[in-house]
Length: 280
Image (cartoon, rainbow, N blue to C red):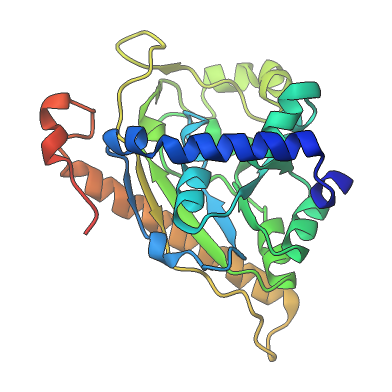
């Protein structure tokens, strides 16, 4: 926790280098025609909680969301990372911290909110990444409401942010609850650390694991207000905030999939580059 308040000098130096490099990469990123809209919905003071969806690609959302937030309002997004990432040591840990990764613990999130920092959380965690047949762009939040509780406690607006494209890089071949998924649950728990979930079988291009070329579509939805009305008790209000965030993110994912349907550049065909759908 002390490292959140008193950033080591070496981490600060890495942070400045990382974001200076990110600024110089803007022309390269723009050449990829990533679809991004809703940046005007980001509170300018940087004091908000981003709530996103994990995809089977596992990395696109982790990179693109902080990149475009920094590019728009100049803040570093502090992403709540899983245990495997935050248990790294040495230079790897310094680089992750410099880029914004922090331990995914409620106390960490609360401290960041007290400091007024921009925070990113994926309520579904690893479950959102473990997609089975026909589960693309579904939210596996189950009973997780810790993010809403913290946002309400600190009156932090929630900005739902959806990414479409990442669940199409690989296609799942087996259903949740099927024979394969049930038989691999024990080994799955050891591999990915998510209780009660087996190992998805996926394919990319053809029968291979080569990722399928997919354009990425990113949208920041209008903030969800978390300030509790005086006549509403804490728990019902937390449930309401969670549901509003879930509904807004689900709607965003549905809308982005509709945008993608009309996009001739969705598979990154260079011949369709000039006709790529752009935000209105």
